[in-house]
Image 1 (cartoon, rainbow, N blue to C red):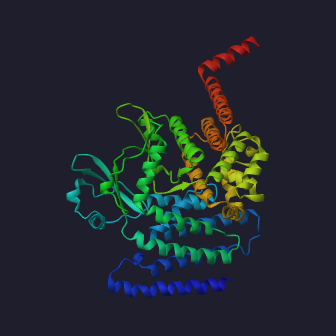
Image 2: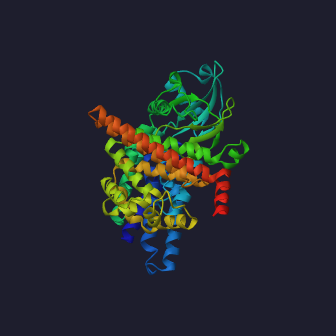
Image 3: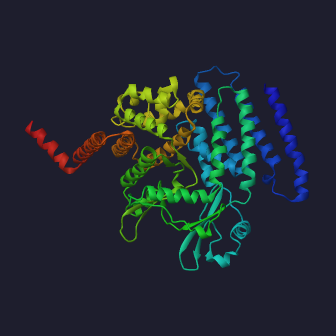
Amino acid sequence: MAGRLLKVSSLATAVFASSGFYLYSRQLDPSDLSVIRFGRAAATTAVIAYDYLTSFKNVEHGTEEYWALKSKVHQRSAERLRDLCCANRGTFIKVGQHLGALDYLLPEEYTSTLKVLHSRAPQSSMEEIQQVIREDLGKELSELFVSFEERPRGAASLAQVHKAVLHDGRMVAVKVQHPKVQTQSSKDIVVMEVLLRAVHWLFPDFGFMWLVEEAKKNMPLELDFLNEGRNAERVARMLAHYPFLKVPQIHWDLSTKRILTMDFAEGGQVNDRDYMRRHSINVNEISENLGKMYSEMIFVHGFVHCDPHPGNVLVRKCPQSKKTEIVLLDHGLYQVLQPDFRLNYCRLWQALIGGDMSGVERYSRRLGAGDLYPLFACVLTARSWTAVNAGISSTPVTNSEDVEIRTNAGLYLPQISELLNRVPRQMLLLLKTNDLLRGIETTLQTRAASSSFINMSRCCIRAMARHKRSKARSRTRRLQIALAESLGLWRIGMYELFLWVKGSALGCWLAALLGLLH
């Protein structure tokens, strides 16, 4: 098998080298040619596979030496994969960023190495940006804007954002797609599919075809900026009752499939504790409000923003009201949850919060986990099986538990891979979203705060009541549902009040007084 890999690697190298003469004569960027992109990807895949096949031949499985060596192989492979993504750019960086967000699903060596891709996105030249604007809007920059900053405010895998000023004086952010992404993305996905199938043939336990399926489905949507604009307006309407949430207004007259123009929004990234300290922003309030938004999206509406990495979630103090606000950006990737899936997911979280193990098993099985439901519960909550049994709302997260979960991501990679291929496709982006939100909470040091479980419980009660009302046929039944909903929400409110009193100076004073009386 190793010999077969060497042949594949040699062929890829030959293709790569022979293409150099053609490129030199035509003065083209090598990364624009499909044969070069495929050659790089094939050579990298072959080298990584060869490393895994040969490195453990003389090491006994399960020993300390084995695990130390495996960590080194993971690290080497992750660095090769990162370098491939940086070289091929576009779709490769997007998929690499997706993998880097799966903190509790992939070995730590991969996630920590691939996270840097968020800051290594390519930049298009000003000439390329002007060409896209000229082609799509039919005018020169000077006709559309009073000023247009040449240096992008942010560059991502698929586009970059420039600050500009309209002729009426309004500041806007102009998101312009990299010109070659559209033509390259479909070919890149085919390359990934071919190579992942080859890896699965060599390593049957490696089942990451779900990654290609998700890319096939989501990439066309993310490349359509008009779709992103519609998503932004929909979520703004949906969560309009949260005054702390701001979604930049879209300027449709200056937007196309490759250009999205919106109001310019200032703020610090949600994981920037120094920015929050300088601007007197309460991290607990930010964490709680983020939890409210996402609980509502997931459990009540089933329309979920699935890319909440820190660059897409800004925080700021409103200059007028001085109240804290959250600005939600990049609305290209949303997951629409089917009603049955959403309700089973809702019931599962209610069981997890309450430590109802029969409910955890029942609803995990309904969501496709089968006999892997204990692993599914741990993956979903990023908690140990002991904590899940005790009820995650009553068991604080410890550093040792967090280390255990991250370590197990490497140990149980084949089982996690099987699980991800079993569960509905809707679950995959939710798992990524969960991991990104957990990463923010970890940075803010608000992980597993009681407020997050309270907000989730409220939304679960509302979602279940809404579903029951839609099925009710009589006024009496609807009244019963409304009363049960009100009672459930009242209980949560009382529990929240109890926690507030317990943590306040009044609570400490009452506890001391009761101690003295006792």
